[in-house]
Image 1 (tube, rainbow, N blue to C red):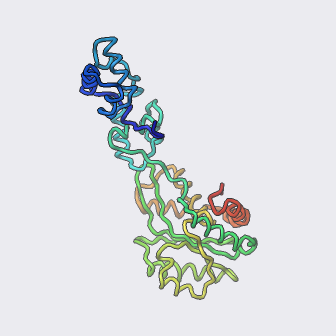
Image 2: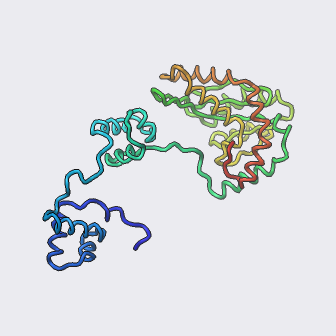
Image 3: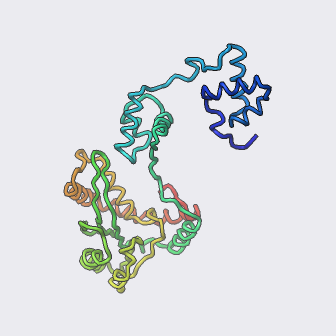
Amino acid sequence: MPLRRRRSHYQQLTEFERGRVVGLREGGFSFRDIAERLARNVSTVHDCWQQWSREGTDSRRLGSERPRGNTEREDRRVRRMAVAHRTASAAEIRAAVGTTVIQRTVANRLHQGQLRARRPVACIPLIPNHCRLRREWCLAIAHWRTEWRVCFLMKVGSALVPVVAVCWLEGSQRAISYVSRSTLVVIPSTVTANLYVSLVIQPVALSFKNRIQGGVFQQDIARPHTAVVTQHALQSVVRLPWPARSPDLSPIEHVWVIIGRQLQRHPQPALTVPVLNDQVQQAWNSIPQTDIRHLYDTMHARLHAYIQNSGGYTGY
């Protein structure tokens, strides 16, 4: 018996296949020969012949299959929901439609309509090389304690509010340190290296760095951050590398998570970009500095947790 059975072997026989089973069996073929000819399981062929021998018919009995747990109308609502909300998971579709069936049934109905339910990504996939580089990075600064207090971090990101309508806030730039934070800079167009230098590095990052004695600068490895013009503008700044695929290794990523949760809990979801801009500004200004300090103070414990987990993800 093969280690993995083909699902098609166990599907219901068509009326034509049932007739072939009866004809071939009466012609002297064995159950195994018939199963090979029809690409079906031997037990399926045997059951069909037994029904013919016992009842004199090869048609399926009415009501022989499991009763459906939902109606055709609910199936149509499930499919419409999946088309209207492409990123919705089976659980979200089930809750929105209000059907009583389980998530697996919702996924099956979508599959029958050539649709798919989505599953949100819990974390960025890591390969062994990523884990090795992450562990080496953690080992290099595992002794840091007060050093984090002179490290200021900058992040470029986008805010998404998926509750009623989808609005993107492109190129929001912000920086944090142990004692303060910068203003939130919103770039209304695609972030390029030249825009990043002229609107963020020179007016925000460099002036922010001058307020921190012995400051160390860290940013992610987005293309505008690694461009030649950006590297030239940061020649006089001490920089801390950022491992690839490691948003969890920087406190500012957790700050962005706090902002995202505040936006999701907002009583009036943003329908336009200007409204979303105002809500992000309010969320950014409302974060207590003590919460940011706590993220810095826990970095020592986080680094050791990543080292113990060989560079993989932890509970942080």
